[in-house]
Length: 154
Image: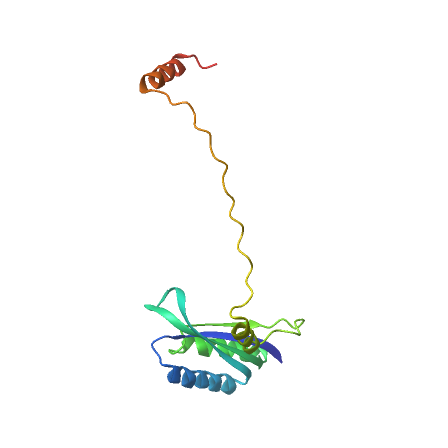
C-alpha cells in the first residue's frame, strides 16, 4: 500500500458545518473506493489564484491516504466528477521522508511563536547618487545633433 496526500478545494459558499459534512462525505468516498484515510486537516478559506466556475474563494482540505495505485486512479476519476469539489490533487508521499511535521504541530508552533519563522527579506540596496551633468540649451543640442548627422559614417 502506498501513502498519498489528497488535497481538495471546496467552494467557499458552504458554512463550516457543511464543510465538515462534505469532508466526511469525501472521506466516505475514499473508503468506499478501497483506501484508508489516516489524517484530515482543514487548511481554511483562501483566495484562489484564478476563478474556477466563477468561484474566487475556496476551503482547502488536506487528507493523508493509504491506498493501492489502482484505487488512487479510481479515486481520481470519482473526485473529478464530484460536484462538491472544485479541484483536487493526489500526490504520492516520499517514502524516504520519515519526520514530516504535522500540520497540527505547525499550528501549535505558530500560536506559540506568534508567527512561523520566515526568511528575512532581502536588504534594500540604495543606489549611488547620480552626478548632475551640464545642462545644454536647445540651440546647443540642435547644433550637436546637426554635427552628428552631417558626419560621414565610416
